[in-house]
Amino acid sequence: MSVPAQRRELAGGQAPVLLAVAAGGALGATARYAASLLWPTAPGAFPWTTLLVNAAGCAVIGVFMVLVTDVWCAHRLLRPFFGTGVLGGFTTFSTYAVGIQRLLQGGDPGTALAYLAATVSAALAGVWCAASLTRRLIPGRRK
Image (cartoon, rainbow, N blue to C red):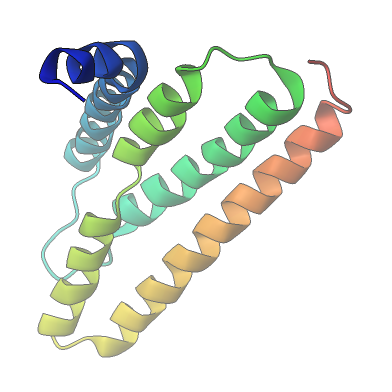
C-alpha cells in the first residue's frame, strides 16, 4: 500500500476514532484532575478521591454501556469519545497504583491492601449495580 493510500485510509477510518478518544480523554483527565484539586489527598492519607472517582466512573460506564447497546442507536464515535475517552481519562489505574505504592512506602500495607480491594470491589459493584438499575428503569430494546 502506498503512503497516500494509507493516509486516505487513516483519514476515512481510524483518524476520527483517534481524535474522538483523544478529545474525550482530555476532558476526562481534566475532570479527574479537578476532583484531585477539590478534594486533595494528604501525604500518607487514604486516597478517597481516587477511589470515589474510579467507582463513580465505573458506575457511569455501566449506565452508558446499557444505553449504547440496548437503548440508543448511537453515532459510531460516541462510544470511543465518551466510553474510551472521557470515562477512560476520568478513571485512573495509574493514580490508583501510585496510591497503593505510597501507602506501602509509608509503612501501611494493611491500608494499601484495603485500598486495592476496595477499589476493585467498588468498580465492579458500580458497573454491575448501575447497569442493572439502568436495565430495570429502561426496559427492553428501543433501537
